Image 1 (cartoon, rainbow, N blue to C red):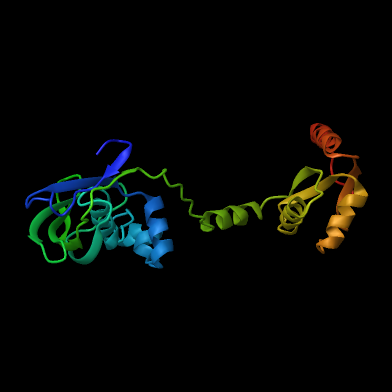
Image 2: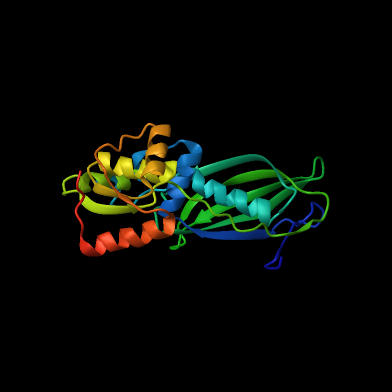
Length: 254
């Protein structure tokens, strides 16, 4: 297998004793993504305060994260594309914590021509060569040779609001910041301004064409009655006027 292609091994090509491995380091992002996909929001996986009390301060990975690595080996390396996962038996021997590097290895132990069935011994070890999971997987190996381009790298973002809420709570204890908002003439920008003002985070000055701002506010039922509006005919002049107000440290007047 090259860096650019993913290549399988057919049933006829696999020999008992053949093996392949995959290495991954468990991250906090992995935990949050796995929790989002599985619905398993056990605090041992996500709550650092809980983890400090019960698990020596390190978040613990979901056991099936190790199982997912085994699936990755079977699906991409041995046998590879075209593999059909039939069954999996696993024993979880010790926890995997954030920062641990796990090597998942599968080794062919038996073949049955009926259904192109291959049994694999499965073993996951951490960076200290300690076994974290072991078991047996049974797959239907591909009958045709495949050589495919590797898919484009996936980019996944997990939105987590707890830190955002904590930041908002800290900011609510402070005096609102004076803010010049340039050309808030669409729903998104005006909504964000109103929301921040209602949360007590800012005292806004709206800079732009007053009639257009009023029209957007009325259309989306935003209450801007208490906001100072500074006239500017277009977005470029609104930006320049907003910068000027900031430099002068102008305070909103209602």
